[in-house]
Length: 120
Image (cartoon, rainbow, N blue to C red):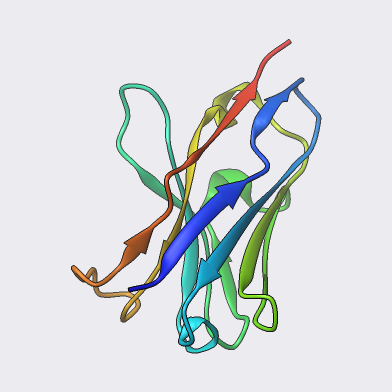
């Protein structure tokens, strides 16, 4: 199973930027889709951005134009660049490795999460 470790969260003011990184172990990283999710207090976990093995991306509407997902298959990392952060972006952000996108699988892997707090 792929192991995932996120980093880069923190406290930022509205309008600021953060870059999250997810480091993965496992030889199949490059052939699997990856995603960033987030979960705010009292809310369900939601997909923020997804990137295919070939680099195709998609985003939830609320982050389009502000967030960018990217991957480096040589380093086994997937990053989430977050710009123009808003109060409503506050959440715990999770990295996910898909066994077989888009079908949820018990073989999917999740990171432990990294907290992002947007506050003035």
